[in-house]
Image (cartoon, rainbow over the protein chains, first blue to last red):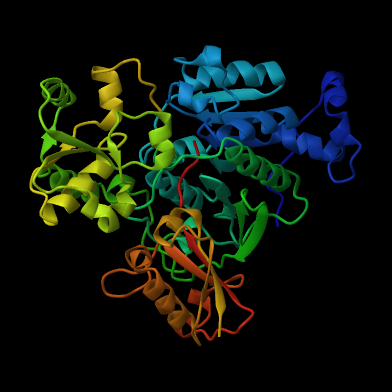
Length: 390
Length: 92
């Protein structure tokens, strides 16, 4: 592989030589390699779960220029895994919080901030100032955008993604290797694959995967070892098993194939099925709903209402409003536990699963089933603020 | 003949919460048919309505993508492992 980084202009001060001494004495790095790190410009898209360990280790290792893209604000639910951000940062911009920590770890790193939502209009221009892109985003639209922008601008895409206690990592969009679309030509329809916010994620998992990404970024810069190109590493933290699968370059890939049909960035929200989301919204609009205030009033009036909770038992344990628990997946086999002559109000965490449950119940003859708007989160916000939210 | 199918986390709720399922068949296609016969809830997550494997779900026989073998017709043997690798996007 051709040298990715030109280190001829890079110089290290005596302070930096001391700081990086454990690198300099390694034959795989040496002073030459450390200069490459200093000359390298890496863009981290996202400073959350994956972006935290990535940015921390790349900064510590002495990557000369680090770009950070994020528009988000730190919230309490981030702290369980996003180790760049502290409790005192809740409410601050993630970029402000990240830059404080990173400059304090290594003041020799130049940080470029992008307080924006990466999109088809700005991606290529931002990418043009960097050598390597590390994708730590959290949705399909941005992942396809990052991939296509990497292919179009000829920059490697160091990739990882996570779900619960499993993760995937690879390097896409190098000249010889496959891209993300070679692996997955199309995204799943919205709603079929749960996000971390819906499905949960083990706090250390983005740590594991983000460190794999940082390792691959550093290897690409140094030009050493076997980069994770054409290979997909699957990490199952529960079994603590690492597996490796081959990823081939698809000659018919619409972006990186021989006859590409995607020659410029497209509308990725549309590509990832915003239309699908609208269809889902229309479907749920037909599902009758009840506001938390109305349910509260009617329960206080001792009306005969059966409250059904379709969340999972572990969620019920965190917080509940004493509903009868039947997880959505078990509803078809346990529907006999319900009385179709009674009024049934169904709730979940925020209203999506219970909408499916109401739809199912109505089709099964439970004509008096309604969905609690906003789920138990809305109840905790508007009716009983002593309840914990998750 | 019994083949091992590894089920990824996002699909385990539709496969009786199991991470590995033993199926039978002479080809990858037969093995997957046996899988969805045993766990019908998996069907819509793996196949589109016309019965084709969904484009955001990859199936590997050992470490090779079946798209680069002979797809559904790829023969399987006793010691083989089929891995289902759906796309996931989480990162925050």
